[in-house]
Figure 1 (cartoon, helix red, strand yellow):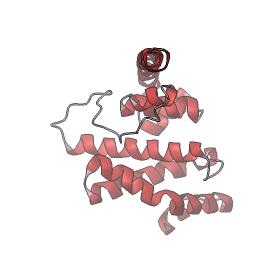
Figure 2 (figure 1 turned 120 degrees about the vertical axis):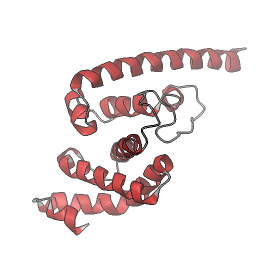
Figure 3 (figure 1 turned 45 degrees about the horizontal axis):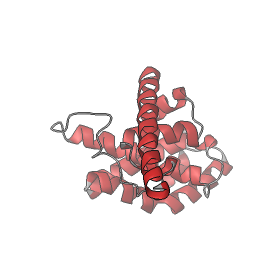
Length: 179
């Protein structure tokens, strides 16, 4: 952790990072290991995620906010997926590949959380970064190493698929509760 702290000049940023490190490191390792199934690669993904967090530390307001936890999980997922793609050329890249990312159990209320949980990891993370965490497409592109155009295209596809999922869930809701 000392190496990370040396990268931060501001004392309040160091305190914030220390809190984030202590609070989320184990979760980050868990998330990365769910994708990579390899401790060494998982630690590399977490390291890359911490570097990204350091670059964006000013945007994190409070370590205890759900948005912060979501941001950290998304960044860790993305870094793990990047390592997985580099490690295995046998898996062709597909932005909607449902094997990538961790599974999120649906809350069961036939609402937006259910629909989001059914989206591929790539779509889910872009929607959460954009609409739950408030990042611009330019900021998301920088965070995830994508072009801004690509972020816009994938967000458009993600919103379309989310609409479809909401429509499907709406029909289930009507069948289960009105019929």
